[in-house]
Image (cartoon, rainbow, N blue to C red; front, side, top):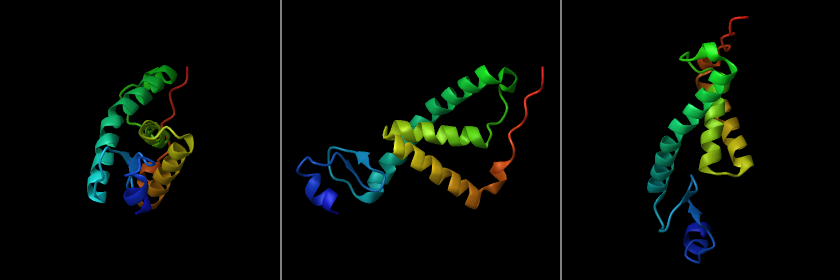
Length: 118
């Protein structure tokens, strides 16, 4: 509340709300979350394509195969790092992502496929 009512009007806060969105005007929490989600959705395709490009360099035979647990966490971290470049923020988001997967989607924690040998 202090951030929104005191610091923001004085120009001492540049981001607001639960998702810390950058905005020129004060918004309600729902609008701030909506803006944050829109930004995350916009950042996802680039993070996914970067992850896939790196994977194809390391495991060229894995092209087109489903992404594994490690890659999903890496994509989440990439998106978080673009959303907020503070390194600790991205690491905290990745840790939260992994906790949510553990708690609600354990089936996604299947072992990564092993690439075929030479």
